[in-house]
Image 1: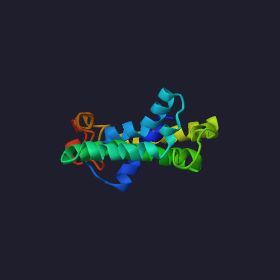
Image 2: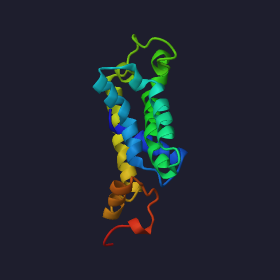
Image 3: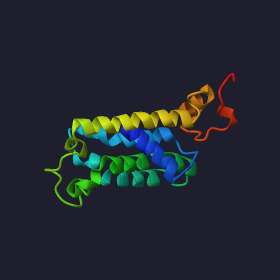
Image 4: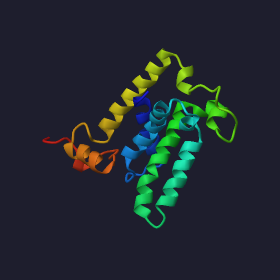
Length: 169
């Protein structure tokens, strides 16, 4: 799944934090990271355990001591990983979610593997609709400036202001 995690992480960030200055590109990267790591490592339990976002959070905090702007920016990555864990349902399997502290994850299956193909398609369709809503509500549908701002800074202008109104109209 791809669009499901993109949409749920972005919408959750807006709803929970409402911070227009956050780098949403890193939120999306974090939300996709567990599945990328899972594929790259051949299914290591770390990718879908709470250990991944917690270690990422600790690493960001330690690597950015005295660098507030860098910390603010890079915290978006482990937050995105947390969103992945929430919206993947990783917490449904305690042995996997709490690995390595909570037991042996050898017999655990990924939450995705427990879903039917139809349910996955419904989730991806919801993700597609959510991406369309984000595209429209952030002004990117009508403004090349909004698109450029997103690619340059990672900022989404929800409730896009006058600077992102329809171009040429």
